Every structure is written in C-alpha cells, then in structure tokens.
Length: 335
Image (tube, rainbow, N blue to C red; front, side):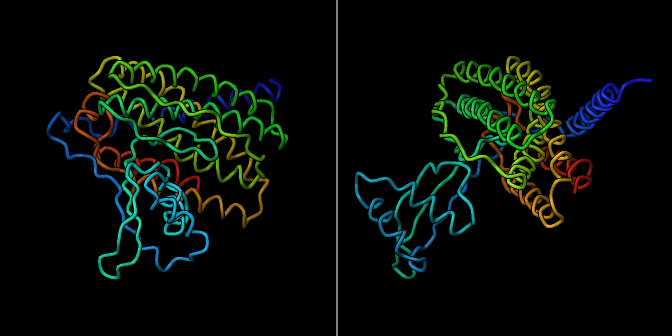
C-alpha cells in the first residue's frame, strides 16, 4: 500500500499533466497567421485627458505645482489623478504626462498617454513597467526581460509570505524553483532584446514589503498567478508556435513550459489558501479574479506589425479566442 505522500505526489503529477494538456489545447485551437508585416493595425495606446478642477485640492496642489514647474515631474500627478479616476494606479508608467486645459471650462486638466505591451508574469508589490525605446521588437523583448526579472523578486516575496503563514514545504520549495526559472528567463529575454539593439532597463530591487495576510496573499495570487501567469503561459506557448524569429520561437518553447509550472503552482496556492478564508473573504478573491480577467480583455490591442510577425504575439482575434477558452475551461470552473 503506497504511503499518503506517494499518493499525493502521484495526484500532483497527474493534475500537472492534465493542466498542461488543457493549456496546450487552448494554444493549438487559437488561429495562427493573418498578421504579416504591413497588414496589421498599429498599436492603439491608452490616452486620456482628465479635468482636475472638481477633485479635492489639498493633496493635488503640490503635485500640480511640481508639474507646472519647467524642471518638475508630472508623473506623480498623473498617477494620483489616474488613481482617483480609476481606483488603482496604472500598471505602466505614462509615456507622456503633462498639464492641459479643459477646452470647455478652462480648468486645469491632466493629459497622459500610456502604451502597454507585456501581460504575462507575476509582478511584485509596487512593480511598474517601463516602455522601451528603439526597435519595436527589441523594446517588447526588453520589457519582457524586465518583467521576468521582477518576477524573481515576486517569487522571493511569495516564499517569505508562505514561511510566515506556515505553508507546506512543497509550496515553499516550488517558489524557490520558480524564482530560479525566472532568472533564466530574464537572461534569455535580455539576450534577445540586445539582438534587436535594445538594452533592458532593469530597476533596482523594491524595498522590503510588509508581509501579507492570508486574504491579501490569496487576492494577489489569484490576480498575478491564477489569471495573469496562466494567460502568460498560454501566450508564451502561442509564441513558440507563431514567432518567425527562430531564436524567439525556441526561447518561448522553453519559457512556456516553465510558465505552465508557475501557473499550476498558483492554482495549488489557491487551493491551499481558500479553505482558510471566510465566505466573505472568498467572495473578495473571486471578485478580484473577475476584475483581472476583465482587465486582460480590455488590454488586448493590436501590436505593431513587426512585433506580431517576428516575436509571434497573438493577434486580437487569437488573444480573444484564448481568453474565451480560458474562461470556459479554467477560470469559470474555479469561480
């Protein structure tokens, strides 16, 4: 009679195989092609002008003054106005951020322009992406390298949270292995970006965050792992099929396997955390997952043609098809 540890290990391997097959079926079902150079629409950035005259003034006043100063910085003002308007900070640093004037009322307004590209990957608390400059493919790959490097920290933070919460050793070990994978991914994407003439701008490590409660960790894991990493694994698998650059195709084949393991780890964490929460807290986690799924759908835009062609990013049609399959086969069942 096998021990319970052996039974659990066999069940884990069987679940992992099924999860890998399910994601592979989603990748293979997505349409390939239809995006040769010159045939795809240009990327549509996020652009918004928000009037700030009707917002509480005390906290904004110094930010407005700094933005109006010729040598000042407008990004803190844009961040704060975006947070008040949308309820959260933007994921990406604005490419353009400046003072403007409401053409109807004449009041002060903020105009910003945000271009977002990379979606997959677990982000540490406080992470902000930065738009690369130069060759479009190199800029995309540089952003991917920066995100992979940030994921190393994210898994380190996750490990420390799991230690503090008394998580099983198997989960703690898996986070260490995932951080090692992300180190390899960052080096790979760094090399690919440099082939296209763009050097990633790796940011210094963020200061030590406070340890998260079970609820905070469950919400973060649901958003960053169960939603973003799961979709990121699917996108990497798609790139392994569709990229016209053979080096990118080979690299994404390796990365997709690791990202599938990381996504599976997220679901194991989800299963461990949820029974420890109250019904109201579980509802918060479900709501956060739903919002993250909606954010992914809203973020789908057409990239520049050469990016689609060379690095194999899914077209709008393919991305929506994969998200619909993930909704039907993974996320709706979890909910």
